[in-house]
Length: 194
Ligand code: SF4
Image (tube, rainbow, N blue to C red; front, side, top):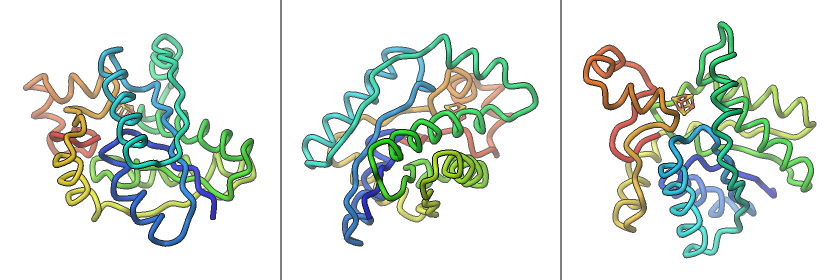
């Protein structure tokens, strides 16, 4: 199959890309992450994505727009919906749109490799956007790949982020009282996780 894989960051691409290619799929990676804040963090992750896909000869597409204001507005105006679900819908919606427009057979996301994400939320957002754009969403539970692939990413010297992406997750990671409160939730990143 021709698969467009939404890529949250270079380290999370390592395992899923290797697996999909081994299974015989043609994989193209898409960087679309307006949730990553602030600007220097966004550039660091974008640059790591470009470096890794170039070095590994992985076909890649990048959206380099830093859409801070519109993304923050989406988060703040979300009503009762959990923030991460808005985030998944935003990123997977754009991936589904691009995949349909460019004639891919299916799309998926490296978010599926992270033990810190809400997998039911990812699956729901993927399936809803797939229906909207008449394209297949591949939900994969790639969590067992997380630790070995991140070890490989470290050995390659890839940039490893310290928090999930948005400024709210940055505070949850570095504000000691918030971190304590959030310690048992999936949204807190550990070194290199997202
Ligand atoms: S914690 Fe991560 S998944 Fe949730 S809204 Fe922030 S960047 Fe998106």
